[in-house]
Length: 284
Image (tube, rainbow, N blue to C red; front, side, top):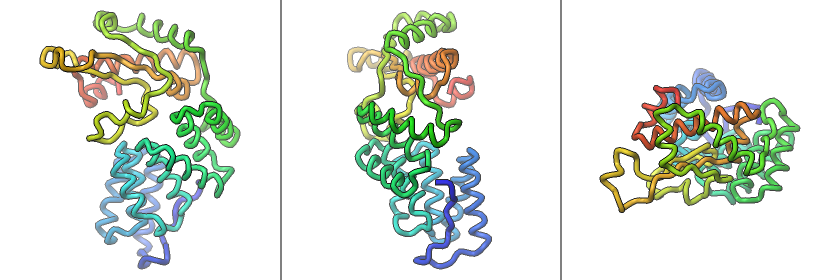
């Protein structure tokens, strides 16, 4: 998990040094968070190399990081047995299965990666997330602890709270909402749940699933749609997911801030704002 792939698998024609260097730069860009640039470079490289598996691998990884798990998994699956770093590919495949809510496949592959590289923290953390969503919370905590032991700075332990303590923080965050949002907060239920359900994340199945790590979720018609769908839809509700927020935040103060930001974001959806609108307002 610490080495970048070496794009020279013997089953394919050798790549020119200039192409190898560009693939390396693509992985560097992806690691540094330049996801869109890495994806664009990978797509260009696929065109130039007749869909070489190493270019496809980079493209699939960029798609996964960009929030397109179905397309990513399709691209990554095409690379099996054809890239130099099979362990890294298995890690990305496991992550793709997790994001697609194919939890048994994700667990199997994360365990395969751990068997190959037991001292690598990322697959332990990935396995923990899978086990958590499967409801195997004790096993999940053990995997979180192992990831923390291996890389404490990168994988801090989640700070767990009782349900009552967490709901008190949510109530405190609601009290600090802007005045223009408070009437909506009084009208829309805010429900604290441990984790999202697979059914909620899948939606109607017509699009990519919602990421399992989502912090909150607005369900129901927006304020703009409420008159049009009166009596035909579920009433609006905002979900706040405790274990995801606990994993995301490291202090009580940070938790209050993130809950408040999550509520702003979901109320924005209720008011009919798009993701682009929310991003412009710093709520994404």
